[in-house]
Length: 438
Image (cartoon, rainbow, N blue to C red; front, side, top):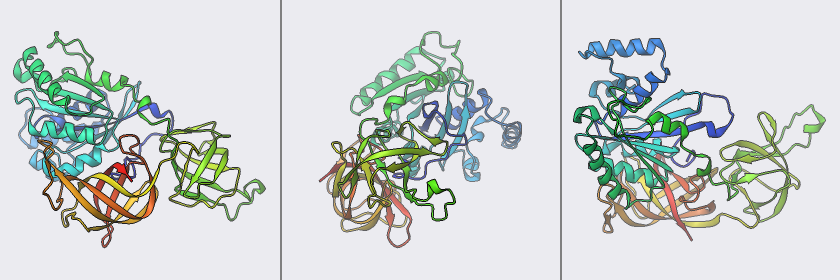
């Protein structure tokens, strides 16, 4: 959810086939080996530079370690290296001949829930690590729940440190059965469970000879082959207008009357000749042309950034929506949403006033009701709660000063997500996932 839950990292590669790029987030409890796993992926796929490796080796020696600590490749902040934990969301990029990857290495501590929400919000897949010695913990369950709350389509449970339990299949089977029972309570579309040892590289890039009883793929092979093209909503056409392009000093006569509407496709497929509807006016027109940075295109789909040229001159501006005449989003000023509160200096209460950013539209809002606060460890709903504090999650009803064109978050992560902004400071204080609109 690029616009709804924080800034998405910009890919360092030129635009091309979007299916070749997989965004995945990692999460795990402290010392589950999350950063080591990412370091192993980067190291074994030859995605680090010699000077980076040399720096990690020097730091490892300075810490008195007799091995190269690959976790230091992702623990970039000084505070992280000193404490041996992940605090911030660290984005890393690597590629194999099969696919390109963006990794969001998210923190595991409960006090950094907001960081995990930010990192997982744009992910196609989440990798949740558990320590084979400890099995499932409260944090493991919390990470799985947050991944499903954020509608991450694919989930991988990586049972790490199998070397410390003698690579025993019974340990893996026990954790698999325990997690599968918990996962039955959640809405998980695709679950894969892989036994690994991030420290030694077992089942990370190559299949492990130490676990002949496991006949599934290595983690990297799964990441390379998981099918994500069908995860995007290609049915509901949603095009939030970001900018109106009018060249005022065009020397080319063909550009003199150019009027295009730029934005990122949030759903569906658009083609020249398609009949479309403009919101909020309700007027219909036809797509004349689709322009991209590489020239005219025969079609546009999520998450392509394009410019639409229409047959008719309509009064269209930033924040408006282009959709299909017979497949429209909900137009409403009242929404119910699950909110993750991210502010250290304020709390969310009924009657709180906020600024809401939804796709490219911004409006003021008030919290009408706080229905309950959710315990992410037990899934218990506290209906007596009167506030949400830092990293807490709850269900609220918002009343907006102007309508938004939205869908349930479960149907479209782009048009179903909101950013909550403090009126006075313009700081982001929360993220919301729309569950209902009235």
